[in-house]
Image (spheres, one colour):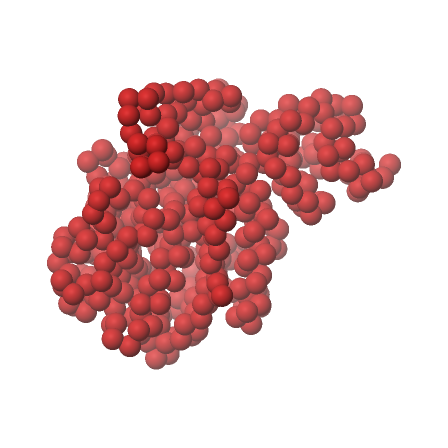
Length: 350
Length: 72
């Protein structure tokens, strides 16, 4: 059964951190496109600006800053954190799990259950479902979910299909038991047959790093990348999303017995403007309820859903929120969560 | 779908003008996404991006969707 239902658990706070350095795509894109194509591409992709980490800053640094802000502003007793889940595709090291490094850096107890989840676009919703499952255990008090990515580190700047798209961000989400929480619903899916459509082939143990894996090659579209950089088949990903996501959202709404009109906000993984606008149109979602962050921050992979919630917090009073993450894996997951009592902290920069 | 409406819709999605059955098509990667979106919206069908990429004319696109889906 891929549908989960939780009672008596709520998200008490969400924080997010982005790097200070901004890249303006209208300038950056001049290196890749002629003026007309650049304007058209930015209009379709929807990313005007995005944030990029310096070489020395990692995803865990962004998540650490977001977690420290959350602990300080919410007056959290760190000893009450029983579980730390780090969701990312850009860990600090090949081993150990970044969650172990963060447990120590954040000053959490040695009794903390800490582990990594390697997922991207669907990662936040997947991580959240795992966090809910832990929070559901009677002996667990608080669960900290750190979700982030620095995709600008693995995208070739000479790959026209991806170079303007991605931004870096890290987030922190705190869950705890709450008597007045509404039920939370998840459904989660996987189709590994499409794994090659969004893939970094090199650098793992199937295709280990060597001199050749860093050699730049040109594809049939004129994009330059090496096998340690992201390959994305945008057409197939778009196709997969249209085929699977609306259907899966409808299934979750049906199971949870919630009418789509009762959803106050829709927060989708910020893949690109073309894709999420089309999903919005296909599902007949009210634009006013559809939250966006990719115009200023790009596609921030695992961080996109919580970052979108944080940066839109002043314009909306969140209520029953539908989250949907979809992409790399291929993997997709949805959640219906009541965020009425969740505290959203102000976005921080490092 | 009425052919005239299909041509108009295709022009709208691809930001082109004066399309008819005999028009050649050269689809960019964004054009491929647009055609996938158009077919999904109007015909509730999905095709692989690699299939759409091979399309070289409006006629070929109509054949892929199925000529029975169009009326004059």
